[in-house]
Image 1 (cartoon, rainbow, N blue to C red):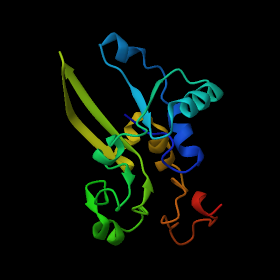
Image 2: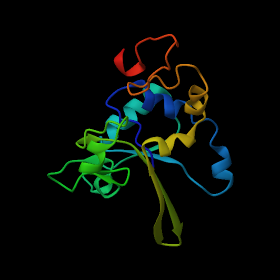
Image 3: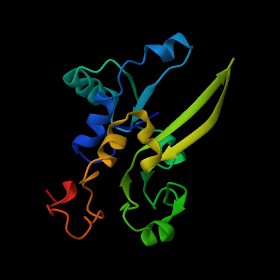
Image 4: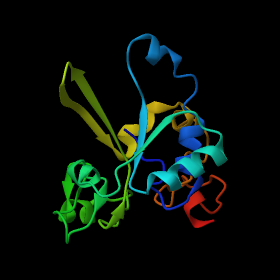
Length: 165
Protein backbone atom coordinates (compact mmCIF):
# COMPACT_ATOMS: atom_id res chain seq x y z
CA UNK A 1 0.00 0.00 0.00
CA UNK A 2 1.34 3.41 -0.91
CA UNK A 3 -0.51 6.72 -0.99
CA UNK A 4 0.84 8.92 -3.81
CA UNK A 5 -1.24 11.89 -2.71
CA UNK A 6 0.59 12.23 0.60
CA UNK A 7 2.55 15.37 -0.10
CA UNK A 8 -0.27 17.76 -0.91
CA UNK A 9 0.34 18.03 -4.62
CA UNK A 10 4.13 18.07 -4.98
CA UNK A 11 5.60 16.18 -7.88
CA UNK A 12 7.43 13.75 -5.58
CA UNK A 13 4.48 11.46 -5.02
CA UNK A 14 3.44 11.37 -8.65
CA UNK A 15 7.07 10.94 -9.65
CA UNK A 16 7.35 7.94 -7.35
CA UNK A 17 4.40 6.14 -8.94
CA UNK A 18 5.71 7.10 -12.39
CA UNK A 19 9.09 5.58 -11.46
CA UNK A 20 7.78 2.26 -10.19
CA UNK A 21 8.77 0.52 -13.39
CA UNK A 22 7.75 -2.92 -14.53
CA UNK A 23 5.81 -4.71 -11.81
CA UNK A 24 5.25 -7.91 -13.82
CA UNK A 25 7.78 -9.81 -11.73
CA UNK A 26 5.44 -9.36 -8.76
CA UNK A 27 2.53 -10.92 -10.63
CA UNK A 28 4.77 -13.81 -11.68
CA UNK A 29 5.34 -14.43 -7.95
CA UNK A 30 1.64 -14.22 -6.98
CA UNK A 31 2.19 -10.78 -5.43
CA UNK A 32 0.18 -7.60 -6.02
CA UNK A 33 1.21 -3.96 -5.57
CA UNK A 34 -1.66 -1.55 -4.94
CA UNK A 35 -1.98 2.11 -4.11
CA UNK A 36 -4.40 3.27 -1.40
CA UNK A 37 -5.62 6.84 -0.89
CA UNK A 38 -8.38 8.46 1.18
CA UNK A 39 -10.01 10.26 -1.73
CA UNK A 40 -13.26 8.86 -3.19
CA UNK A 41 -12.67 6.13 -5.77
CA UNK A 42 -14.14 8.16 -8.66
CA UNK A 43 -11.59 10.93 -8.03
CA UNK A 44 -8.74 8.40 -7.83
CA UNK A 45 -9.81 6.66 -11.03
CA UNK A 46 -9.99 10.00 -12.89
CA UNK A 47 -6.48 10.94 -11.73
CA UNK A 48 -5.18 7.47 -12.58
CA UNK A 49 -6.60 7.81 -16.11
CA UNK A 50 -5.14 11.32 -16.47
CA UNK A 51 -1.68 10.01 -15.48
CA UNK A 52 -1.99 6.89 -17.62
CA UNK A 53 -1.25 4.61 -14.68
CA UNK A 54 -2.14 0.93 -14.75
CA UNK A 55 -1.35 0.22 -11.09
CA UNK A 56 -4.30 -0.92 -8.98
CA UNK A 57 -5.60 1.95 -6.85
CA UNK A 58 -8.09 1.62 -4.01
CA UNK A 59 -9.95 4.14 -1.89
CA UNK A 60 -9.93 3.98 1.89
CA UNK A 61 -12.51 6.78 2.03
CA UNK A 62 -14.91 6.30 4.93
CA UNK A 63 -12.77 3.68 6.65
CA UNK A 64 -10.22 3.71 9.48
CA UNK A 65 -7.49 2.19 7.27
CA UNK A 66 -5.29 5.31 7.03
CA UNK A 67 -5.62 5.98 10.77
CA UNK A 68 -4.85 2.36 11.62
CA UNK A 69 -1.61 2.56 9.62
CA UNK A 70 -0.68 6.07 10.81
CA UNK A 71 -0.69 7.89 7.47
CA UNK A 72 -3.67 10.15 8.18
CA UNK A 73 -2.86 12.23 11.22
CA UNK A 74 -5.75 13.84 13.05
CA UNK A 75 -5.42 14.07 16.85
CA UNK A 76 -9.23 14.44 17.09
CA UNK A 77 -9.59 10.93 15.65
CA UNK A 78 -6.52 9.06 16.94
CA UNK A 79 -3.26 9.91 18.71
CA UNK A 80 -0.86 11.35 16.13
CA UNK A 81 2.00 8.98 15.39
CA UNK A 82 4.18 8.90 12.29
CA UNK A 83 7.24 6.83 11.49
CA UNK A 84 6.91 5.17 14.91
CA UNK A 85 7.21 8.56 16.63
CA UNK A 86 4.63 10.45 18.66
CA UNK A 87 3.98 14.18 18.37
CA UNK A 88 6.74 15.15 20.85
CA UNK A 89 9.30 12.90 19.14
CA UNK A 90 8.42 14.33 15.72
CA UNK A 91 8.66 17.91 17.01
CA UNK A 92 12.16 17.17 18.30
CA UNK A 93 13.29 15.48 15.05
CA UNK A 94 15.49 17.66 12.89
CA UNK A 95 15.19 17.69 9.13
CA UNK A 96 12.02 15.69 8.67
CA UNK A 97 9.17 18.10 9.08
CA UNK A 98 5.89 16.34 9.68
CA UNK A 99 2.98 18.57 10.57
CA UNK A 100 1.33 15.82 12.66
CA UNK A 101 -1.97 16.69 11.08
CA UNK A 102 -3.05 15.76 7.58
CA UNK A 103 -1.75 13.18 5.16
CA UNK A 104 1.65 11.48 5.14
CA UNK A 105 2.85 8.44 3.23
CA UNK A 106 3.63 4.88 4.14
CA UNK A 107 4.27 1.46 2.72
CA UNK A 108 2.58 -1.58 4.22
CA UNK A 109 2.82 -5.24 3.30
CA UNK A 110 0.06 -7.75 3.85
CA UNK A 111 0.10 -11.52 3.48
CA UNK A 112 -3.02 -13.45 2.60
CA UNK A 113 -3.32 -17.09 3.51
CA UNK A 114 -6.68 -18.48 2.45
CA UNK A 115 -9.23 -16.14 4.09
CA UNK A 116 -6.82 -14.67 6.65
CA UNK A 117 -4.87 -11.44 6.04
CA UNK A 118 -1.77 -10.59 8.07
CA UNK A 119 0.01 -7.23 8.32
CA UNK A 120 3.71 -8.11 8.01
CA UNK A 121 5.60 -4.84 7.45
CA UNK A 122 5.27 -1.06 7.46
CA UNK A 123 7.71 1.72 6.60
CA UNK A 124 7.33 5.48 6.51
CA UNK A 125 9.22 8.60 5.39
CA UNK A 126 12.60 7.65 3.91
CA UNK A 127 11.91 3.99 4.63
CA UNK A 128 9.66 3.90 1.55
CA UNK A 129 12.35 5.04 -0.88
CA UNK A 130 13.41 1.56 -1.82
CA UNK A 131 10.49 1.46 -4.27
CA UNK A 132 12.70 3.30 -6.79
CA UNK A 133 16.38 4.21 -7.13
CA UNK A 134 15.78 7.92 -7.77
CA UNK A 135 16.63 9.13 -4.27
CA UNK A 136 19.75 6.98 -4.11
CA UNK A 137 20.88 8.60 -7.35
CA UNK A 138 20.18 12.11 -5.99
CA UNK A 139 22.18 11.24 -2.86
CA UNK A 140 25.28 10.84 -5.04
CA UNK A 141 25.02 14.34 -6.54
CA UNK A 142 26.61 17.52 -5.10
CA UNK A 143 23.26 19.05 -4.16
CA UNK A 144 21.75 15.78 -2.91
CA UNK A 145 18.01 15.75 -2.48
CA UNK A 146 17.83 19.55 -2.29
CA UNK A 147 15.78 19.53 0.88
CA UNK A 148 15.58 22.55 3.18
CA UNK A 149 17.53 20.98 6.03
CA UNK A 150 20.52 20.04 3.85
CA UNK A 151 23.46 22.42 4.08
CA UNK A 152 26.14 22.59 1.43
CA UNK A 153 29.65 22.35 2.90
CA UNK A 154 31.67 25.61 3.06
CA UNK A 155 33.07 26.43 -0.35
CA UNK A 156 30.39 24.52 -2.24
CA UNK A 157 28.12 26.49 -4.57
CA UNK A 158 24.96 27.59 -2.80
CA UNK A 159 21.47 27.67 -4.27
CA UNK A 160 17.93 27.46 -2.89
CA UNK A 161 16.80 23.95 -2.04
CA UNK A 162 13.92 22.19 -3.77
CA UNK A 163 11.68 22.97 -0.80
CA UNK A 164 12.44 26.70 -1.03
CA UNK A 165 11.68 27.03 -4.73
